[in-house]
Length: 189
Image 1: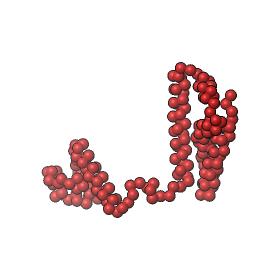
Image 2: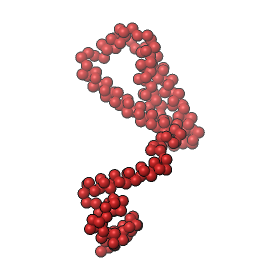
Image 3: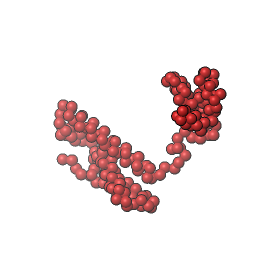
Image 4: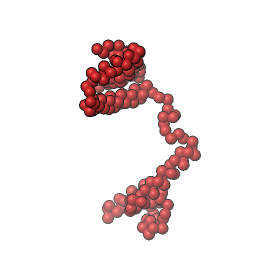
């Protein structure tokens, strides 16, 4: 009995139409509008799917009439900290996938790594092209490392003031570009 009273009280709080007459109409199947039916009264998967589709349509129609954008990316100015965080995750994922792909690729390739390196050298490309290729490969590593050090300082409790956040963010960007260019300048023998 206590469970029934508590359920009825919750129904009244959550669904303002939870009068005994309404509940009898729901039980007898007279109510067909999904928005008027508490979710736990829907028995099969199809009814629940129709309920959520109806709710979704109502929500998006309201957003459209209020002329609200679908994504907050269109209305908020990008923050440096958010962009750096997204880039940190992206570079980590890119490096993980690249290393795994390279490892599998070099193991299934018919020749060893030095053969392919000599093949690229034999193309006699202008010096700028291998340099840019090495810089593109080195940049995610240097960026991820620099931002990782930044996070280590945060873990120790340093650099949370807004001014320091932006300074360290710009420092990481500058470090990653300079370090990637320096690594790319190392000749491959």
